[in-house]
Length: 341
Image (cartoon, rainbow, N blue to C red):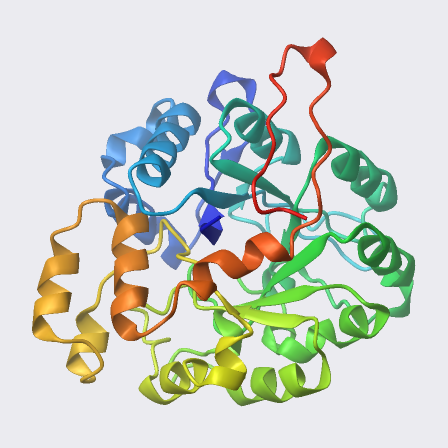
C-alpha cells in the first residue's frame, strides 16, 4: 500500500464542519497562492471551502499512483497549564472532520491533533483511538508542545501502548505563526522515543537556508539512538529553500533511506526547480513533472526521479496500528485497510 503520510486539510466551517481558517501576517498573503497550488481559485476561501478542498484532494489521490493519503487535523495552541492561547493559530481542523472524511473515502487515513496540555487530552485520545486514528499530528513550535515535559508522560505512554504514531513538525516553519522556535529541534521527541512511541520527524529537521537553524544532522544522530524514529521527505520538492542537496543525498544512503517515508505536504507548492538547479534532477524529469496537474502525483514522481525507492511509499503501511472496523449500526460499510498490521 503506497501512502502519502503528510497531506493537509483546510476549511472555513461551511456545512458545520467546525473548521476555521484565519491566516495572519505573511500567511494571509500566501493563502490564495496555496489554493492555486491545488487548482482552486482564491474565491474558494469565501465559498464552501471544506467540501471543495476535500473533493479536490480526494481526486488527486484517486488519480495518483498512490493508494491513500494521511489527512491531518490541526488543534489550537495551548499553554502548559491547559489554557488555550487565543488568536495564536491561523487555522483549525477538528478531529471529527478528518474522521468523517476517512469514513466516507477509503483513500483517506485520519491523523488527529490533540494538544497534550488540554484538560481533556487523555479522554480525547481514547475517543480517537476507538474511532480509528492512525496517527497524531502536531507542530511543536507553533502549538507550544514540548513533549519532553514530565506532565505529558501518561499521554505518551498511552500512545505507545496503542501503537499510535506521532508525526511532529521539525525544522523551519514559514507558513504558520511560530510561538517557540526552540521546539523545531527534533530532540523535542526524545522523551516520546524513550517511552516507545513511534515518531516521524516531518521534514527530517531541515531548515530554510540562511534563515532558520537546520537540524538535519540532529535528526540523523537521533535515528542512530532510536529505532522507532523515522523522517519524512515532505516539502523537499518545494521552492521554500528547505531543499539541500547534501541532506537529500544523505537521505538516499541505505542506512538512512530505511528511515524515510514519503510525504508531500500538499497544499505546499510542488516543483522540481531547485532540484534541477542543484543538478539533482534531469531537465527532462523536471519538465515532465511540471506538466503533471495533480500535485500529489507530481510530488511522487519527483521523489522517484530524485532516487527515493518504492519502499519510501510503502513503509508507513507496515508501521500503522490496526484500525477498528466502523460500527455497522452507523451505516458505515466495513472496509479493511490492506497493508496495515
